[in-house]
Amino acid sequence: MWRKIHRQHIIIFMVHGVVDPLLQTTWRPLRRQLSVEKLDRGLALLAKHYQFISMGQAVSMLAGKVPLQPYSIVLTFDDGYRNNVTQAIPILRKYNAPATFFLSTGHVERREPFWYDRLDYAIQHLSKEQSVTFADQTFFFRPYQEEVSRSTFTNLRNLIKANALPYHETMREVNLIANSLEDNAHCRLADIFENDHNSAIMSWEEARWANGQGITIASHSVDHAILDRLGDFFIREQLTESKKIIELRTGERCLYFCYPYARWNNNVALLVRETGYVAAFTTNRGTNKVGDDLMTLHRISFSELQL
Image (cartoon, rainbow, N blue to C red; front, top):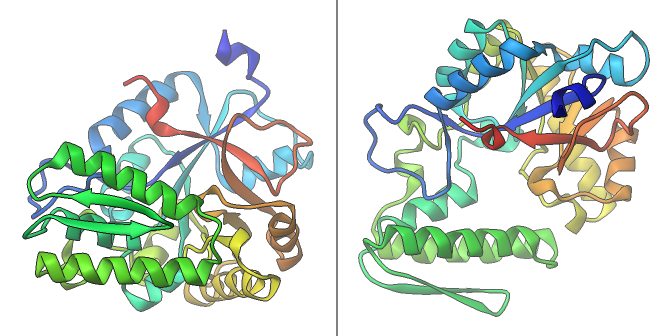
């Protein structure tokens, strides 16, 4: 019934990392990740009832430029993890499914992990109990207590993402917390990052290869920044610089943007449009129909599929 009701809507699915639990690794993130098995099973299920279309096709349909094809699905992958290339693309090719990868270009350029992966790794390697404080809330972490650490880390991560502090102040605080946890753990994710299946970011060479495999490369800002906590000058900088570097490194136009942390407001959306993007994507749950605002398109988490 749901499928029939939404047959004239475009469904956009959202994925982050894709991991193979059988691959040998020195750690497993506390945050949940999609397994290759579930991605394969999900695409097999969807392929029976829907058609996979590219981002360009979807946007043209939603803009009313071409007729909408019923039962259409778009696949998007946020953050630019290398495992999207090594693990997801072979499965996407199996089902002839195009997709869009949203890259945070500063992380690709600087070759550094995301702050949440950095914290995650340090928390799991603590040598002794430690408390950290952010926005007047204190969080306690103890070694070898995975489920407790998972819950506590989720709460800390959500507070960092949702807080009302200016972005640069938030990142200064996060960096201090990360340094402290790493001192306790006597190790850093940065030391193993490039060869880590869970946290490594794809290179530009890999992004160009992915582009040749039916993947659209798009922007997730420069620094995966909390855009609604930045002034207009810095918002424009995040938007224009990421767009520019993607076009320079891939030789393809960068037309699509994904709001990091799902943080946006009307002003941010206006600046995205003014910067030259033709569509932007939120994490607001829902489907999309012809005439919807292309700057605030809805998505559904792939993990919601009952697999």
